Image (cartoon, rainbow, N blue to C red; front, side, top):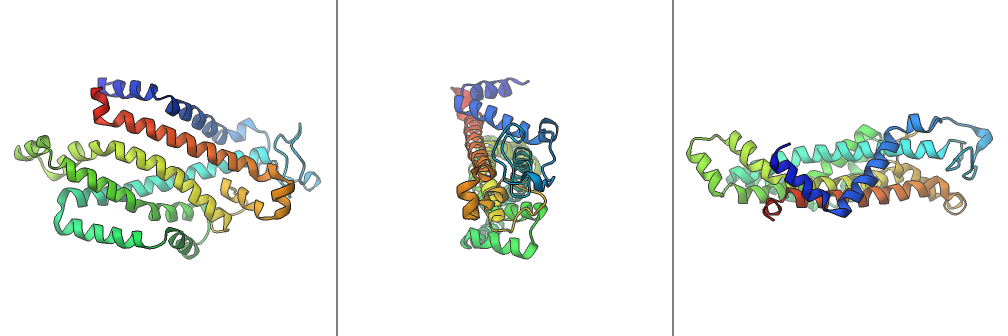
Length: 283
């Protein structure tokens, strides 16, 4: 471990909310990823003799309208929601970072062209674009990832562009350019590494937004489809008044897990932002 990495880790460890968020997110992720081994129940298995059972010894979180075990189903749904969050935000980061780096580094007509396109995309109401893309591409986990990723990159592009506009004027970048360094080297060696704090914050915020967007799409029936489930699709069951009032064990655990995941990722992102901030290494 290099000295810089060690200093960043020490800085991150001192951020108590970030460490608490890391613990909470780690536990939730572990339960979701290992639910098949931890909970000996098929999340999609239907048992019509055990419909709408309240939480008890046999089913710790009760069962739904078709007798499926809600403990296994909730954490299996979390695996889908976390996958959607990670992959959609990763897609948005790739697109936004690439276009933002080009716009910020080269400037001129390239900058104008990219930023006018970004402005055009950002003028459309997000929820309308999200629903339209979902309706055009159709429901499904893979399509939901693509839809959310294609909607989330413009803000990342603007943040990366703003940072690189500053970095490219730094003396060490000018010195490297004078010594004959090419554009690719300058971008990969000097510009992009110094946008890491921006990318970390963008990932943490985008991850939470992606989970919320997926929950909204699934709530409207445009996201993850049966027999698979996500936290959003489980919450969507609460549209029925009887379930909302009489069977809270079906939707409430998913809502709690969404809130805990969102808070923990935001805390982690704040801690990483401080640890990657170049100014913090001087303190």
